[in-house]
Picture 1 (cartoon, rainbow, N blue to C red):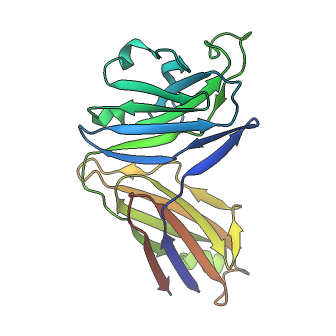
Picture 2 (cartoon, one colour):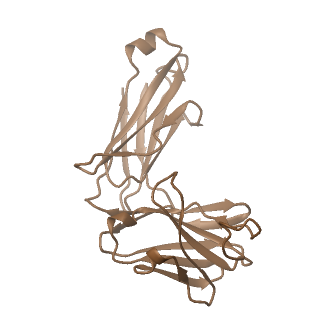
Picture 3 (cartoon, rainbow, N blue to C red):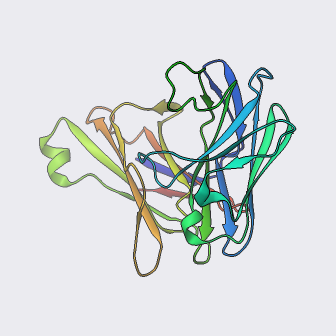
Length: 246
């Protein structure tokens, strides 16, 4: 059985949401006490209001940071007045800048667009369209590339069960800007894949780890098949690839 593991960084991504196409860089890294600029662009010039939201972690509620119209001074919620600034280049382009960064600024930042305000609490108001967000990490230690290994199926699985589990482990990386996908041969595999919903962090070292599990039938688990786990790790500069055969 041949195993190939590769790590490559993700590009800037365009998202189409309810017929409005947004462009937001999905991942951003910045230094403590430094500055981060999060850019947003969409393709609907009828949406005059640009809003910014902060989500501290996936699954948590969104907090409104502020909003603005083209050509008018921006407005901010009270807790975001000190270090946050908004800029509007035109109706469809804007940016959010955070200065004097602190660790608690690490979050997902969403750009939204609407024709009017208070769309989040007024059912009669027009719809707000959201991009898929930019995940900002304020560094609290040096960047570290993942160490990747594949765990073989247990002897009990290979002898007694109809399916075997292949486990891809990425560990000792920082920050947690990773995603994992699987292939069998040249075919992308989405079924029977279970990836941790988020990476776990060691409290002392601050390093992260994450695992992904692929279940395959014993019929597929044969020497002529190649199983590929692709871990995308973004650290602004490096591309890391590792191949193993067992």
